[in-house]
Length: 418
Image (cartoon, rainbow, N blue to C red; front, side, top):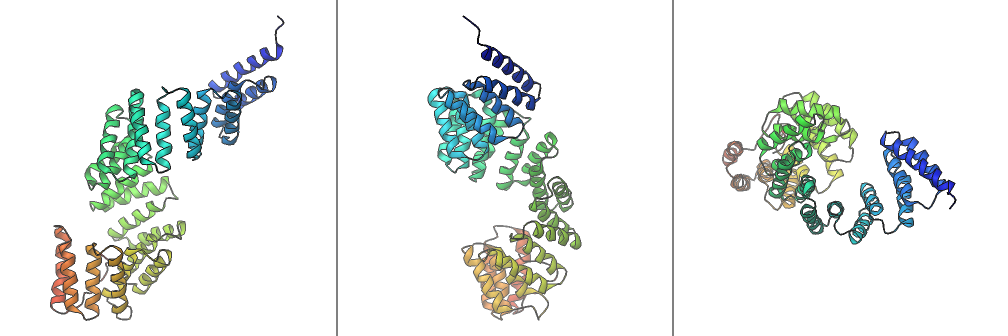
């Protein structure tokens, strides 16, 4: 039987392409696979491997086109569907990725990693129940990669605010692979949200020992430092965040808050100015900058920034509260406005179902500014009843309660809202 020259030449080119791919020369690999395909356009595997080379070069459109062609030529190949599912997931085409995962599992039910990928698709499109079922199947069928599936499930629990479950899964992932910075970070985030900043800081530090430029871990640890009132450490971590991720608004916000606490009001204002430049539609940078204006005695500027924040979000309870605080307590009589303060404070309380003690404290101050001292005492006592044993805040609130009982309004210099 005579030899097929095209087939032989295509096989030689395919071998050269595979060799180039393994050597990291992905452009040469694409060229070899393309020449092989011109000779034998009916060989599915050539398209699949050219897709891999395109992906290494960042050409995701060409890669997806090649995977489509590989599937058209060989519709019973589970690997082509698996590769396309992974790429569709990367491109956030979650519904299509799920469909390809389904096809893989119908062709090869024992391919457990596809349950993991399908679980991620379900998680990202908001189907938590299906995601949890798939992660359980992946763990059962592919125990060698348990750390990966446990981490994905921990991240899902974290998104769903089930912090205990997130902690448990991240801890299990770390038992399987203690060198994974993402698992340390995820457990740290769960512990931070659960109200344990000390343990969270330890996890963020562990993540940073493994990945020193892990910006989310730095930011998380900075928050822990701030909560624990180690403002110098918070500023240092936030400074590193800003250098690593100069477009991350939260980095500037946190560094600004830490600088303000350290008395560096000019530095704090510069950070909040930058946060506003980066995110002009966001609420909190305006409120934070207003706090700096208040601390510097520029009460009118504080009002302007809070009003600007309300334009961004007319239902933001914190903004109503802080605006009410300025109008109630600032020393400048030309800025104070008791009636407007009471209206804003009432709105803040309504938006939070009258459950936030700081907002009730502000309402009490607004009532006092209006000369309604009995109402002020009533709301201040209600606020203190919600503090749950916070001795520092109780002492602060008691000072104002004593003023209201003496029929005196509150005046605060150099401090923002509660």
